[in-house]
Image: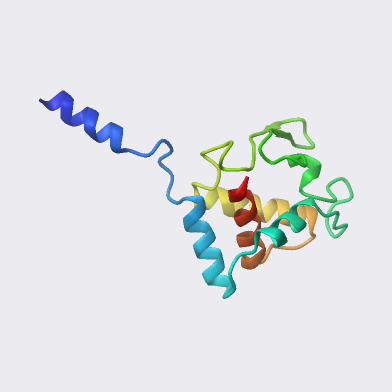
Length: 129
């Protein structure tokens, strides 16, 4: 009986026990910005060359590729898991990690922090893939 109860608890646990989800982050950033997320703006931000950051990272696609359902590669040569939650269910499931990487990557590409609206837009687009 105890084994069945343990199995039931394990079966009900999420595959990735993070502290958030892509949908929760999308809602959070949209509420913070006061505007609904727009996937087309997210795609435009992700794929455009910005030139405001470091010269070797003019766009998100420099490291993450034009297809966020595929792995990318950091400038250091380190593999990057796909950005799209459909291809990488662990993506956008830990708030601290999401904030850390938005912080680093936005500053590297844009030369500034991303706004809450930009974060929501990018997540909204990635959720469509």
